[in-house]
Image (cartoon, rainbow, N blue to C red; front, side, top):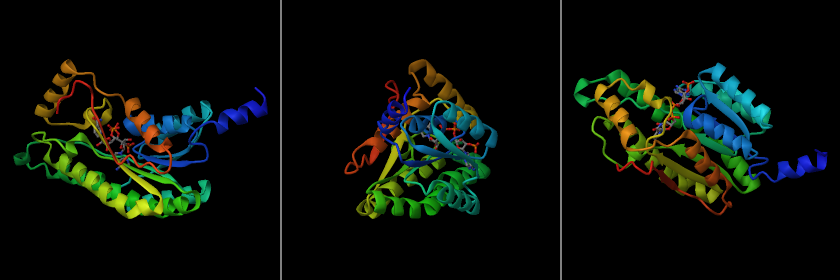
Length: 263
Ligand code: NDP
């Protein structure tokens, strides 16, 4: 392939020149989205705690002709997230696309008082999400000011809208994500930052592996009989779609469900 052909192919990629940060990138939705955004031409910085999984992901993206940087970080640790943001600023010139996606789902009846699991969900789904927003919004504002567009995409859930018995704490954290996103859109939209919340129904990932509640596990297992769960790639394609729309278009809230899922 000639250099000219290669250049034309590279420049044909819609996210060429964009710098994307993806949290929760060591598995599931984040991992698939990192691969997809890289395939669309973005340079991707991938964050999660498991360094080995991130290294494997970066190697795969490199092999497929993309560019990726792995940063092992616990997003509940504000200083670690800020250090990651500083490194991305120094090495990649700052982010213009943030997929704020790390999260955990631990359903249980409220009367069981699993305060450890309540805290874990609040720490990651709310405090972790805010640590990431706090560390990266300055980079998004700068990029949007210079280039006319930046993206902040937060992962909420259908649980932000619908009622699922025993999912109260998880659903509460996800309602927070959706409502926060609406507010941030009003604040950041005038600065050319598009803010979106994505609300998936059931996606087959490691999310279900952390569930300890028998009732929820039975419900999840049973649901496989009545529907085809979404795949992480289904969400990744949607994230790619949001990010490749013209800068004037902010797809604010996306609910994406398995066709067979009724609530
Ligand atoms: P996974 O469990 O596969 O992914 C969760 C990711 O979050 C992992 O990469 C994990 O990596 C990372 N993570 C967990 N804790 C931390 C932490 N303290 N610091 C940094 N990273 C952390 O699940 P999904 O891909 O399904 O989940 C992604 C998002 O999608 C979540 O916000 C979830 O609530 C949401 N969602 C998922 C649905 C589903 O049915 N799967 C439906 C609706 C929403 P590591 O352990 O290496 O840190």
